[in-house]
Length: 145
Image 1: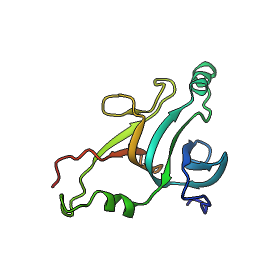
Image 2: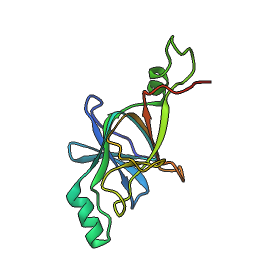
Image 3: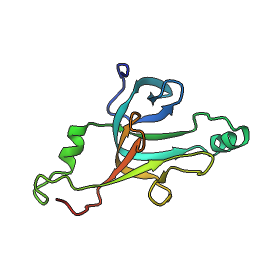
């Protein structure tokens, strides 16, 4: 559904929700380089610009002021990262749904307990998922099957 992405894979991108297109907009060097329904990022940081957050609250109108920054990755890279001799072929990682509502929070938060999140090893972003559009994936090992 998305368009061809033209970006420098050696540099981070910023991804934000495009409310008009109902897609993720992918920005690099201030330019939108693509739009996708699904994207995976690695070495992730979560950003909310305070002035933009305040403007949304005051005007009751959304604007682009929050984004997730990281390197474009893939499902293959994610799986390889979490498979090792120590854990065999099990995929051992912690998944945490993340949300951001400018009317309630000043940062991205974990859905489970509303605690702020600022970094993750990976994020899996899927605009078509009705409940968990952004999943933060960390290297914290959990019990594997």
